[in-house]
Length: 227
Image (cartoon, rainbow, N blue to C red):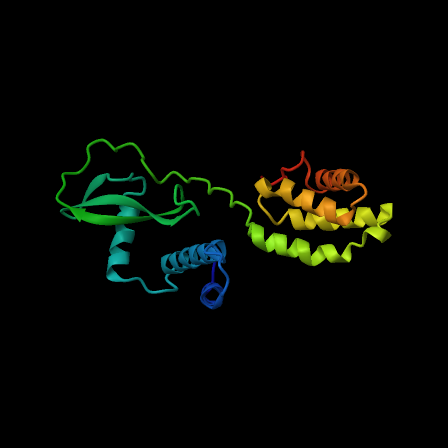
């Protein structure tokens, strides 16, 4: 069972993520999105539990809706019931959606007063079935930023000192760089890296990078394991 301290801690956590988003100066519109969404859900859940337990006060509307929930626990979306001489319709609505907006990550529910009459046969449950959230796609750095990182790193790779062991180390560094860019650009960047690191045998360096990639990420080049 949650306590008031749990509630305050959850609100502080949410406020921290919201402040971090307000102060964020980058160009990623989804920065902190999942953390804020999860923190809001946690606050709602704890608040509901504490109100049910009587540790937080309910508004008159919340108390009345609780009576409806108790009297009609199995009502479905858009089903109409009669209670104390009036009619009420159960409605479900999205509280949080996936990044794409195509699926609902969390549903909310409410009661709305209506004219009636009460539904004789419950309608088919349309929306409150939990829908798994879409996996978040990997966040890639822009092609130009990665290309700039390549040029910043490349001058350190002196072809005169590229013994085989040094090439293995450079191949690992190349994998770290290539993993930051979308798969469609990786082949082009690998060609640039291979030509700069070793002018004598770029094909050998490319084979080392591909081997390292498949060892680190699994699968076949240029696909990473999370794609």
